[in-house]
Amino acid sequence: MLLDIFYGLLVGICASVPIGPIAIFVMQKSLSKGHKAGFVAGLGASLVDTIYAVIAIFALAFVQVFIETHQNMILIVGGAVVALLGLKMTFSNPFRKRMKGGDSGISAKDFAQAVAMGFSNPGAVFVMFTLFAFFGLADDSPQTWEVAPIILSVSTGSVLYWLGLSWAISKFRTRFRLRTILLISRIMGSVIVILGIALLGEGLFQVIFN
Image 1 (cartoon, one colour):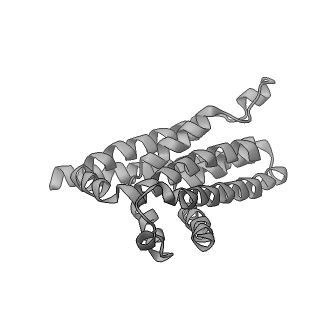
Image 2 (spheres, rainbow, N blue to C red):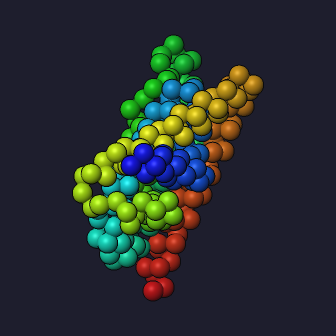
């Protein structure tokens, strides 16, 4: 069991590493608002990873059928959500509250937006299942709540990754002026918009031409 828990930590870390909308979002928050804000956004991603880990163990077959049946709608809705959140990042000023003397740090909205981004890509559950299979957790783990320690270790691994990433990125804040950080923030927002439009476009293409 101890070895499985260690593998669960690795699964949580590996599932978080790929650079996508959530990673860019966490980096943007870490740069513009600091380590705590970036970490809170990362906790939203960790929540999604934990839920996907549970699905990968207990309900993968059902989710696979659901995704295959509604793939185009998932792409359209998910792409629209990602694009809208990217637009908000691009055109908002994360330093506005600071300039007014308010608190620009931790925000429940950052957590919620990270969760929304995570659920906009339900295909990530297959990545989680692949990682479970790679580390030998898919076949050996019983389909009961006895796997709770493994799921908890996956969540812990994800949390540790986002904690480290947000801390590392926030350290770059001291090297840039606010104007430069704002520019980087808007560039990151634009990248998320492009990713969202790509997902939306793929879904619309499938609907129109298939």
